[in-house]
Image 1: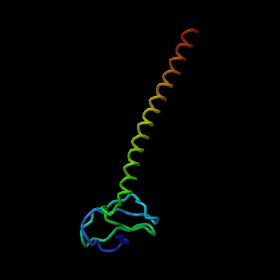
Image 2 (image 1 turned 90 degrees about the vertical axis):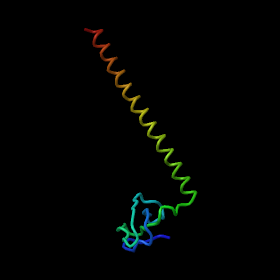
Image 3 (image 1 turned 30 degrees about the vertical axis):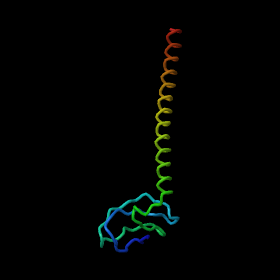
Image 4 (image 1 turned 180 degrees about the vertical axis):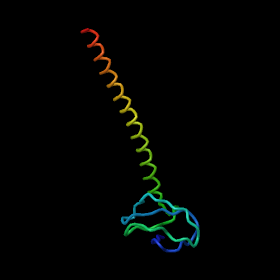
Length: 100
């Protein structure tokens, strides 16, 4: 079940915001029964966190693995950039030392 902003919270718990296409928008709120759902952009709704399907959990897990892999690749790329800069600096020092 999905809820609109301003509606009363039916059960205490964690809720996530969905965008107009039904995808997770990224906001999560821990609410108590009787609270009201926070304002959202037009077309967005709230739903309880446990309402995810197994396919959604699988997609989230895959995205998490991909993000971790991308983070490691960024670290490797940064390290290689640093090595290249150091190599260029050493090459410049060698050229300067050989000529002077």
